[in-house]
Image (cartoon, rainbow, N blue to C red; front, side):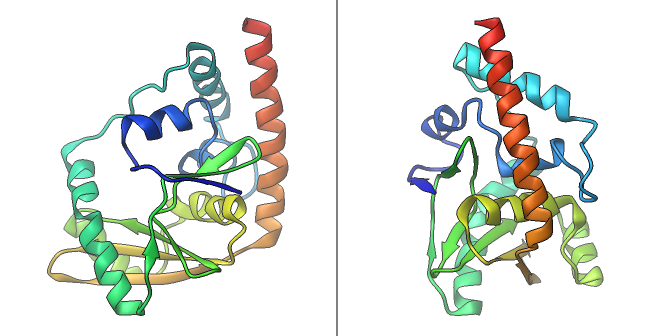
Length: 196
């Protein structure tokens, strides 16, 4: 794995990620059940366009998402205190032809992924006390890319207790995901060759 140090969301980060399948979008390649996603082809063509044009399409960010990004450093500090750890921030991690942008490396074996949703969503997460399935492929994908053993999922909203749940590697799913990514990347490279 190669670690690229840069600020997530910066122009440099977008250049580095250009045309590379990323863990936050692995749900567009494969479902939690291990079947191809209905969004696969659209995501494949998006990445092919980025590779050919050399430009990453701007990702939409609404006010709620922007607020979440602003609260992330506060959530990271709270996590470090709660778990008595230091988080090493990274920009982008690359393994083979795909990558991930975890919110931090923890020790030798762990990661942290931080979400700062609106209050009602955060309360729902607390009541269910499980990691939302929406993030399954992202979290397992980060473990695949980094080779790490676990990721702490953190949901944070100011004034409400945080949710911190450790998610371990699920090697069976990771093996399937890796095989799907290899095929996806081969197809992506073939499309780029055909168009260029």
